[in-house]
Image 1 (cartoon, helix red, strand yellow):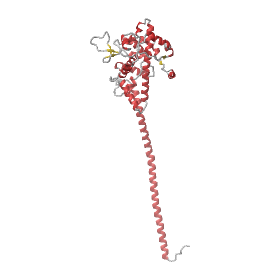
Image 2 (tube, one colour):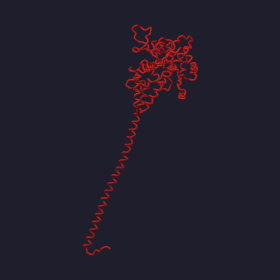
Image 3 (tube, helix red, strand yellow):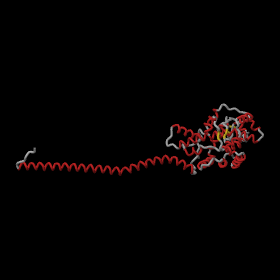
Length: 371
């Protein structure tokens, strides 16, 4: 039950108290209102700032990501651009250090070199059904690797038989070396398509830079030099340089391509001047001769135009045409343009382009499906 108010003084006190209470509550409310307004303003400011700054952050993130992506893609695109334009700085300088070291080591490590007679080789080819007629039809070559030429080849009077025997001996060797380059080239492209490379891949690249005489680790030059030599052109050059396997250099030194040397072991030409210091490189096995020939074409400055023409064919998606590329071998011999004419004549007369798309059968027949 509420207490009654009787006197005036009590009434005044009562109203003063009420007014104070009302003012106090009002002041508290104003404070609360001010706090609410402040918090609302602060929240609004934060929200507005978020929506204002967010697009900037997103755009920055996108630009950063695109810049990174462009850097990676440009590293690949720049290589393509350099190959497409005629850049005189590409493929001009050669580092001769270690250029043929791996070939000489391979040649020295061969210890099972045996010279078979022409009759024995013919019997071997016959027993394995290895004939050029079959190769031209099926485009498959038996993996028979001979280390030296038979001495009796020069005694074979029938020109066609002598030529066929010579082609059957060197054809597997040429395809094998092209396969090795093809594998290396595929590996190079895989490395180029990566943004980061492993230590093993970097070590492999350094080895290839040395083998192909590439200075400053220039990947564009390596890509131009690391490529195949048309089979028909290689056969024609070997035929021209050795007289279809009958020359002294071929018989005594397995020199299929008449490469000169001024420092290494070689055979001095009988018609050379007395003050001449050059020799014809000799090898223990034919395979090393083929490998050195391809390395020579792929690195020597005299064949820069050959490599440029080959790169153009690659860029245009065309096959490596020996009739087109042989035009750039005029510096291979002193006879110049006449040398090119003879090469092209050999290619045409013997239908050597039939062998350009041939493949080497694997030693294991179970791997035949991989061809």
